[in-house]
Image (cartoon, rainbow, N blue to C red; front, side, top):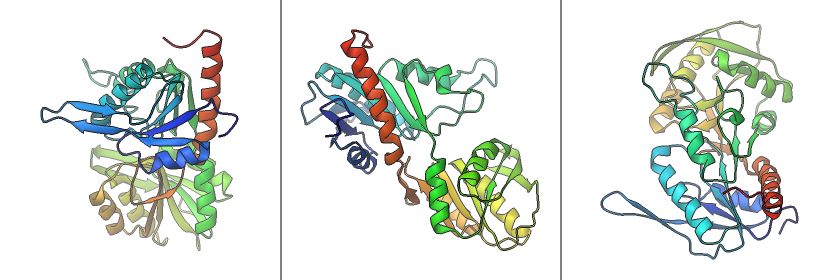
Length: 314
C-alpha cells in the first residue's frame, strides 16, 4: 500500500467504470471493487457493496457520460458508503458532465452546470476530473464547493503523438480549442493552427482554415477535448484534405461519439481515431490513471487531515 494514501483505500467501480477502476487502483497501489447495481421493473435502482467499508477511504470511479442514467446510482453509492463506515468518499470522474449549460441562454432555463455542481458538492468530500469543458466558467471552484483538482491530459497526448506520428501538424477544429491545442503542440514541439467554425445547427457546421501553411510533409492531427456527433471533426478533415494535406488523425480527450459518428469520421477520410480513456470507447489509446492518481493522493490526504482536525464535511 502506498504510504502517501490514507489506509486502507478502496477504489469502487460504478457501472461503466470496470476498465478504468483497476487501472486507477493499480496506480494508487490499492484494492478495487465493482459495485453491484440492480434495476427493478419500475425503473428504481439498488446498489450493493460486497466488501466491508468501515474505516476505509472510498474512491468512487465513475465517468459521467450519460449522466442521467448514472447519477442516482452514484449518489446512492456515496450515501451507502458513509452509512457503512467509510471515513471519506471521493469521486474520480474522468469525464465531468453538465458543463455545457454555463449561462441561461433563454429565459426560464436552468443553468445545469451550477445545479449539477451543487448536487455533487453536497455528496462527496472531493472531486478529481480530467479536462472539464470550461468555457464561461474559469475554474471548477466557481461552481463546486468541495475541493477539486483538474488534471490536464496534454502531456499524455503529446507523448502519444510523439511516439506514433512523424512530423505532426496539430489542428484545432474551432477557436475554443486554440489554447489547449497550442499547449499540446508546445509539449511535442510541433507546429499548430486553428480552424474557424460556423455552427448551423446541432449536426451542421462549416469550418475554414485560418492559415494554409506551408505544411508539406506534415501529418495533420485534429485535436479536441470532446467529440460527440463527429460533424465538426469530419468537416475539418474534409477541409484539410481539400487543400492537399494527407488523411488526418483525430485525437480527443473525451470520446462521446457512437459507432455512427466513428463511421462518419472514417468516411470523411480520418485514418485513425485515438482517445483518452476518460470514457470507455473502442478508440481508447491513452490511459489517464497515472495522471489522476497523484491528484487522488493529494486530496485524500487533505481530507484525512481535516477529519483528524475535526473539520470533516458534514
